[in-house]
Image (cartoon, rainbow over all chains, first blue to last red; front, side):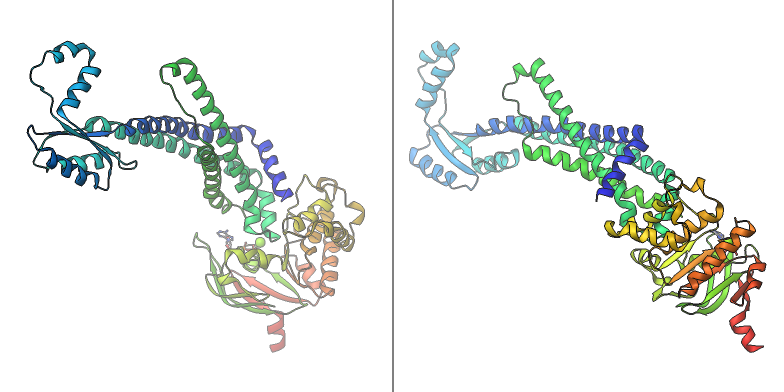
Length: 290
Length: 226
Ligand SMILES: Nc1ncnc2c1ncn2[C@@H]1O[C@H](COP(=O)(O)OP(=O)(O)O)[C@@H](O)[C@H]1O
Ligand SMILES: [Mg+2]
């Protein structure tokens, strides 16, 4: 084991430039993923706030008897997606409008007839607050005869969903491109190291060193570079986050950074990237050494 | 201990290096492989230490069947063999004793046993006093002795030598050859490829002569018949 560690340190000294380059590309790959990840994490956080407020409003036909509505609202409350149902009568709607819409207070006061319909306000349980479930509940509400219209922030919810998915995808693609470059650079480094050490490796093999013993240092080196790259990318993400917060963050309150799980995942990803990259090329290049 | 049965070997480029080669080598024998350059001597040795696989026929070495050797078994086979080459293959940045120790380090020997084992083989090859010398400070004959010490340090029952005296002057050749005979005297099966016929004629050791990949003479077979 100590021998392996010594080999790793030696290899950094043998090819300092390429080793540094490998670490940097891994860091950039994870930094890109990290940045988009941060945006996604914050979008999700924002969506959570929005979703709390997701409501479906079913407007009730004028003149529907209140017993019908009470019964129906019990049915609706029994939908698996629904957390609670509130009945807002015509009078309550008017009172709320007068309170909320200050500009129109006078207009509403002078009204002889209440123009506002009664409604059922439905809130969904957590986990069902996405556009698919909202639409399916709305669909079922429409099938009630006394329901005149159903309103919900459909487009808006769908768009936030899309944005989140798109952010994830773009981050993933750019990150994958960087990761591919990192793997290539790791491969070149290994190729050079193997050429430099061809004689030593050939002797190791002829005296019966196990295949893993020959590969071990390369793999360990790759994993170590991945670790460094992962840590570096976290530092970069943190710096970018702080910079963003200081300059524009004021307008957006409640920004969050990765939690410990996310950070561990990024570092683990780096280690796997370094290890995988080494594994792929070490076998191929070692075959040329005799 | 070693058995070739109707072995054919062709290289990927189409060169047919061995044609129907069969022989049996026993424990404790000393065997010369002779023949002009390109006859197939090195190919036989490469098959013996698992660097090449036979195209046809069967190669057995010390309970291993080389034909079907898995990648993980090649190192196990090689720990039961010592191999030396014409060009010594020493590491220039390590001393004689470090070169020998290298073979133990990379095969996972216990660290605390290494210095004693290294000194023992260096003494056996007559180089105890040069343990701290770097290869460039040693003569060709001495460098080959270091390589032999490295090959012996795992106590293999078989020693393969591919033209071990090919780069040496006459005096060093005699010394190295004498050392190989001593090693054989200790019970090790020694297979030595050489085209130095003077060396071969000095002794009565078994000789297998190759030409264009086929055996044209095997003293163990042909002299019994004659
Ligand atoms: N790695 C190789 N690839 C292709 N041909 C080879 C290779 N090694 C040896 N040969 C060919 O096989 C034949 C036998 O070579 P070799 O076993 O090295 O002979 P020797 O050791 O008796 O000089 C030669 O014709 C040589 O050109
Ligand atoms: Mg040869």
